[in-house]
Length: 387
Image (cartoon, rainbow, N blue to C red; front, side):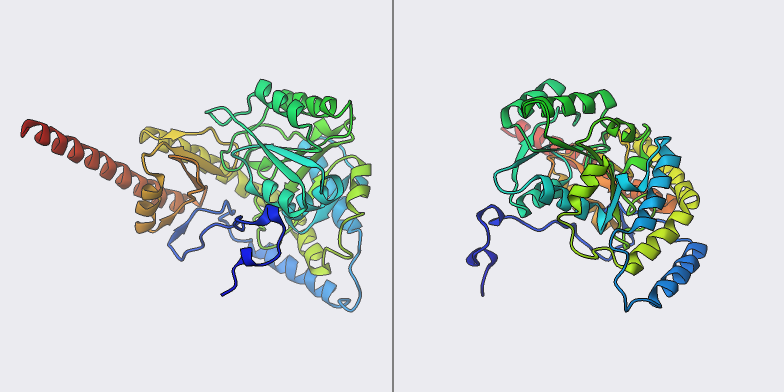
């Protein structure tokens, strides 16, 4: 049987694994940061209306520049952040991953470097390698925040062409302060002789944050880009619609590498319908924020170490064997994410009943772990006495 590494793939892809999380059939699935609320029925009907209209002209290519959609996205950002934008400063693609890919195709590539601060969204590194861009992993503090002094030193050493700042960060949930982002932006420009480094703020989870959006920072900074998605706050993971806000010149640049007619007429119609219901969908976001904060408080009451979260998920631990805790939760019908950070797991925020089920399972697991520790202690003491 032929293996991937038997094929003549590029060297930087050898030994790598595709992105993905286990998809198991369990009562409570809280491992992929999806919005747990189904699309409301009025929106379902509106999507059907818009898609029906779009279907009547499927013999024609869609609007290549998606001007109407970009205009509505600009309006959404303007209304929710207070920062005015026109459509020429917004671009849309098939998920924020395609936004990242287009940015790396335009500003990265062979002989160029991208840098991020791990642990962070693993697709930044994966897409960098996929576009032939060298990836450099910068460190974080033990509390998963960015150490500005160390970060600046790393930027000066590697002089990245593209710098990723994920805020709120996935998988830790930590947000980055505006002054830190500005310092990183300035350091990246200085490292490349005063200008030329593209800095991408990944705000996929921005609507769930306790903090305001970092969007106003793009003003007057032509190589600062903010990336968003409709997958999370809009509950539209199946839609695959991401977008960016930046200087109009950046929008022009990514159009040099985008595929022709990359956004289907059906995708554009569905996204436009969802934007009509933005206020309703953001109401669900407020419920999820409240539930996330409740989960944080409950986990801490159980003695877990919980990272402050500005996203729709929570990182928690610290466990001697995180994989074993993951399995114990799964045995109780709850699927969370084991993503490789020693001693820690990540749980997405679900509906209140789903969160209740997770917390009840955690109470049982914590109690079982405590009993196991007592049993080991007793066995060790008895063994010592029998010497």
